[in-house]
Length: 440
Image 1 (cartoon, rainbow, N blue to C red):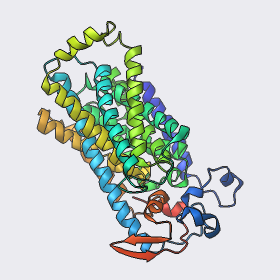
Image 2 (cartoon, helix red, strand yellow):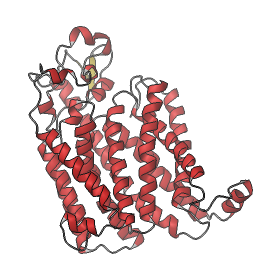
Image 3 (cartoon, helix red, strand yellow):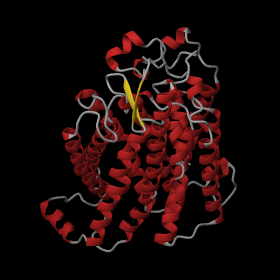
Image 4 (cartoon, one colour):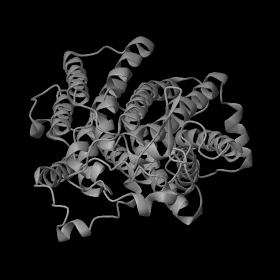
């Protein structure tokens, strides 16, 4: 069936990623190591003194642990980042419920393409406010601020790519939500838990992204098994795949887009300020959504789109529909995107995914209390498996946070503020890839 194509792609990506993840690490002097991207951005030292002071990089096997001052700062930064990612998962959990409420609300007719375009337009307006605030804020100030790299062709190419993945995932997810329950959609989306580390191991641009610890792989595999548990038939993957409907295939394709967006965000956020990158992503999502609305307008029944038709349609929009559209754009859209970008500046995509895996649990709870949708035993077991996977992955000893987050916290004069005090930081070499692999 056509719905088995995403499953075949999933199996292929998992096989390639497993070979990559469990292969022996390359030696620092290996010729293949020289083919890897430059690790200059992985240095903790101030940029002005980096060439003279830093002799070790992330790929150096003999690197020593950071100093206590930097380690304490990193621990607090890591905890703050994880809380941001947890809040992101909670806000994402409101999306399926809000979409079901939007489609069920009386008033104007709303299609998936039109609904997504309206939501993205609201997100773009909110993103412009974020950009204005960022422009007036002092350099490096505030959560999600960053050092430079906020403009130019490179920035907008990065924002466009993130917007393309986000737009495609949202459109496909909206199509699935029209015919599937919110609980089933969120649990099928849990395939992102295995897709994210698989894609990170293949397309990651740094050692911290490509080096996936075995504990994380185990947790992600448990998430995948929990997703298969949603099928009311056999728990085997083949049996579940044979019963996938076209809406299920749309949701699986959306999961692939979401996973790729997270992996690429982890790469781009090292070079651009998180808040500005998130705002640029929201704006490009809106542009792509309106372009898709124009190309596929006949499928949405709006081929006669014009000023008069727009006014007649707007007059039928109820206050409840407008409130739900704005709320679904701000909560799981703007606020969650800002928190995700700030959190993934510290936590790599593969290590952040077990936290994101709690989203189906939050979504099931929202659906149960708001929509009064019953939770079947299979769906409950799938949710419990997802929670167990998150606990397994999070029980690993945290490694050092990403260098971008530490550099944003270290001032240019070589001093670091921690717990209200200032401690001088010496040249600090980074941890090796094997040491960082134990994060989360």
